[in-house]
Image (cartoon, rainbow, N blue to C red; front, side, top):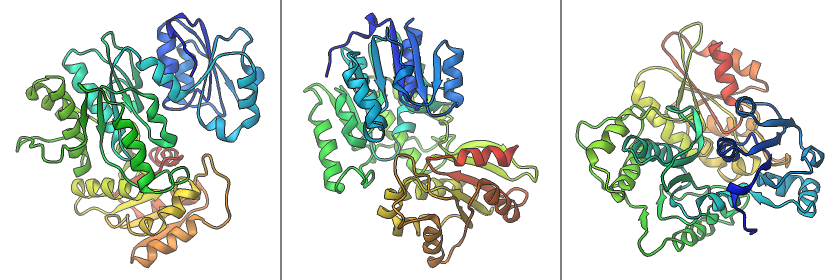
Length: 415
């Protein structure tokens, strides 16, 4: 990897600037006074916010967008796999370049890094840790893979040496980090389009563990941590209690008193697209949105929803994410919606993949039905909205789920 001093860079260009992680680095560089430009395939709330902060945004992906005087290119890892022509032009341009994970390596150098990893729960846990540290006056720099409710941002600029970062396992990206404190929330079979199997995933986490210094802290066994009997979170679910225990363990490693940490956790209101309340329909049906796209995440979230709404009808609108993930967890997808009354599926969100032709949402609907549940398929947002409104009434609950565009359905239902 090239050696870069970000403090000396005057002009940087981000390819894929609208991504939830890479945009945090763009925000950081804007705050440091760097001239920032970038491109993405479409406009979004994130690109709008970056433009308001002074970034110049191009829509589309074209090497010719990149100004000749650019001193550094930071690119999303998706470009390496899906736009070889653009990637080749970046490499031969003579302009220094870093992938987003490599940029985190540069940022974290000479900082006390708290890396939060795991198949599920890392976003919420990262945000919980950030809140505890901010409330305790530790003034950390934070990069998280969502928008934190308190700051409405995925980036917090801190003045201390502490860097809190969500560490993604996809393609072993988290190995770019050198953590002083490493949190592993859990390890599950996911990203099997890259990893061979669960053992391969575990080997990546083992490599990350091996990067801890002798005086570092590994936090991967926090289930037995006792919380006060009267402790409550604002967000539901046993999985979030586990996330809170992990965050509390980090606070203890930093000698923050439990009293302060528990107060922060009790006030924690969640993050964007993690069981996020979006409003009500005209008929007073409550609408939530959630990023859950793995069967275990869906099951955990719905268990929490059922805790909050023990007797109400719960209708889930789900958009499978990736053809490969749908194939890899097909049987589990048929079983993970047990706490819902009705499930409506949108077509699979392809993201970085091409349609292999052997898997679709209709097949998932049939698998759900095999398990005795009511399930439907909607080809378009309009179809899904119409069916949803037929199924729900006053005080019922709708939750849109998936890592694709189901949040747009939630917004349409509320409007």
